[in-house]
Length: 315
Image (tube, rainbow, N blue to C red; front, side, top):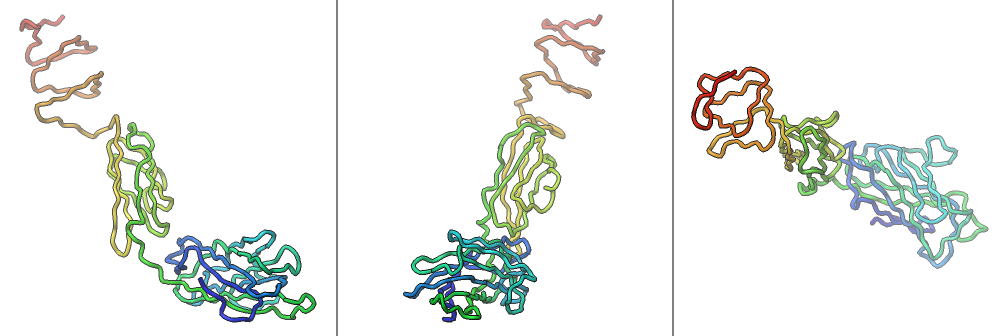
């Protein structure tokens, strides 16, 4: 937490970031940050407040806090109102590159004595260079309602943007399929957890087909597509110059295969009907224990034998 740097204001101000500590943005895709500003009266005299203006330096310098004049304000105390000041607003403020927010109480000259308030500034895009920025505070307040100063009181709060740390590999986890077994051609959805700043890709063999938009870098922590046979999926993501992998698999109850070769002495057993659309070649004896029906000619280069070994004759 960063404390006020001088005694220019009647009220006390402290600031903390979310996340804490505050890191300089790694890229344009870095999630926005939030600032919580605690305002309190540390003295024994009631302070009456009309308005407080917070100015956040913006730009691409080390002393810039945000990289765009944007963000949203939310009053954390009942009745207090926070609004971002648009460019060209009718307020007398020193020039400079700032994202400004004005805080107003529920009523003019609202007293602050025992209880403090928390002001929240959300959706702030932090600048990319590490360094210390100073939030300027201009306070219109007084301890004597009959004596309001002509100019606001002033102070500033330093807040440091630290270098972005390397992402621990362990932060990417929970890579799995919503259904571990599906039918051929059925939809599959893979999900995982991890930082939004990484670039994720899902690798797989020809047994899987991605939906449109899921064949390159993925941003929304999910992969959607279909599978026609058992498929292993690899989730890849680069950290500090190295590529890392997580693996999951989906099995298919009725797979579609490009080919099948059965070896060994176990053979091939089909419990239900088998349909062959092309030629069927049998290189050894064929035993039929049921009825053999044909809608076209059956040709053999040897003989069909009955159970007694006697050759059968065709019609």
